[in-house]
Image (cartoon, rainbow, N blue to C red):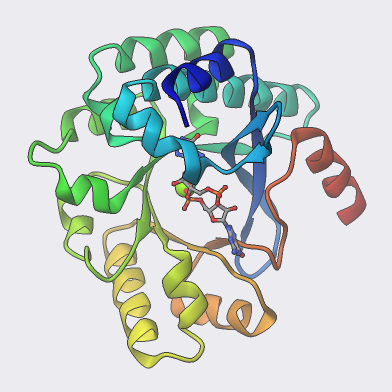
Length: 249
Ligand code: C2E
Ligand code: MG
């Protein structure tokens, strides 16, 4: 993946956001969505973020990419709010964004145009924060002071201690652990430990990657307050999400 190609993608609007429903446990009530970027490549079709986010981080293009995602997600949140069906929108950030001196101002400007800090959630990878020699804690606190919620994303067994160090509202337990916990006691023990540590601090826990009813049936008892996964729905374009919502009620 060449830098100039990715640059073009951002400039020429080849990026698209898909939205994956997040539902309350145990009611399955829809509360929000996670915005997940894809690249609608003219020759290659829909390209996964796993194939171009690392490149965006390595080349510094992650600034423009994240700014685009933030703006697009907030504008979409506005559309839903105007339609009378408000949803929270969770956006994935790279830890590089939190070190970017322009990030704060861009977020403030975007909020000025699109509004709705209470509808915005910022997700940051737990591992990236844990590895950071100079963790960007003040900016996380600043975002929370504005009413934006912060999620520690993709929590896995290596970084239980991260929960104690970072000011967050939500912790997302990784798909790897959630998908294993039904048949692997160690995974289950770890999930229980993270969820109870989170709840002890007033932090909500979300399960990612719930694919079957057997896993769903475990969530409430473990203490999860919300979940996302293919059992509920895959990520989809905004228009399709509206149809999905309409078909559900
Ligand atoms: P993530 O933030 O952990 O997002 C959840 C990923 O798990 C998504 O993959 C989603 O499609 C997938 N997923 C959710 N439920 C299930 C399930 O039940 N089964 C399976 N097999 N998969 C499930 P996706 O969309 O490919 O995104 C991968 C990663 O790329 C994300 O992981 C996130 O770290 C990164 N990413 C996506 N969009 C952005 C973005 O706008 N900015 C940045 N910096 N990173 C992004
Ligand atoms: Mg995420």
